[in-house]
Length: 175
Image 1 (tube, rainbow, N blue to C red):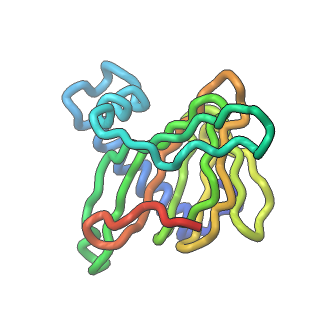
Image 2 (image 1 turned 90 degrees about the horizontal axis):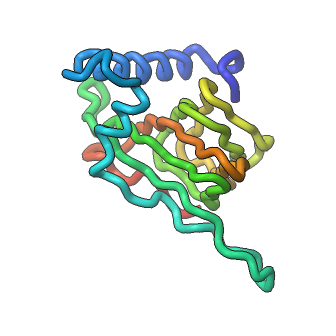
């Protein structure tokens, strides 16, 4: 889903997430000395874990598994006016040709593409190619059929804002 088709509520959530990220970047001691993307990388370089296993190669293909994505959690904060909920912000890196298989998220997810292209499909929806600066939204519990970086050379990177259960409860569920 691109920006023109976002609902007002979703556009407001994207704006709020961007405002929080911009404020954090502007208030940091390095402000003005490096790009926001570099600052985000620096902040979360110590906290990295794979989000999904590599996609298996088709049976009998002899092909190697595709690279997997990785997630770096930037923050998790309780939502004081929404008891029992928190908001988690994370960077997801997609190396060239990276693939993440079917999964679900227990809460709402708003995504902003920072660089590259990610091809993605939710159950019941069309395949979409999302490029730098575009956003998309995943409703809670929706089956995310796949996400991949279709580019064989350039990586892709996105920031995800998850509304989760209190205490940063799980970000990803099995299909």
